Length: 193
Ligand code: ADP
Image 1 (cartoon, rainbow, N blue to C red):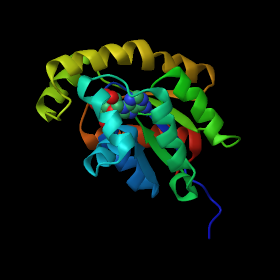
Image 2: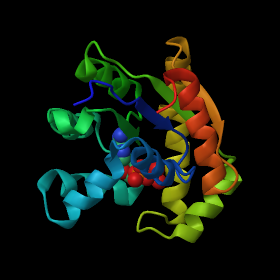
Image 3: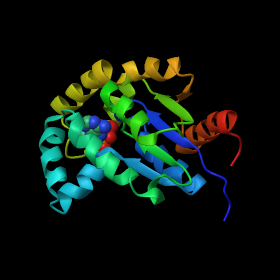
């Protein structure tokens, strides 16, 4: 078995910036797990798992799920080595400074390789969310989530820039174009796959 490991990636970016779509593509490209906390909560709510049902109440209102609940779910997933080897794409986590600090703790000595800010203007993401029409994509929820992104999540751009992990990638263009730009950014940090 090869000892080579894949990149440990965090995708930052507004709701509707394409983190989910690109997260899936990147994970497929590198043969690694795509871990979306939003998707984990939606899946566990659907099958009636308590953490998921609890999270759903916040999600439906467009609020952030409380840090302890999110961290417990992530920690459980990361407790399974198959989730983190050879590498991973985290999408939607961390979303607060507390979550970022807890992620450092969970990862221990082998920290992140790259944090990518997928940049898309607000008017574009609002349009994308309106047309996507997910259960929590109501006007009120979209507005609230974007405000929370600005106040809670955007500060992580500086947090990771200070740690020399941040790269910004333009999220406009076709899915293929954006994936190419992401792969180039990752290769510049981590080397080609
Ligand atoms: P979006 O990027 O459009 O918000 P997600 O699937 O990433 O879509 O998240 C949906 C919802 O799940 C969020 O609005 C929030 O309520 C909850 N959520 C997901 N990840 C987190 C997190 N890391 N911290 C707090 N809440 C989260």
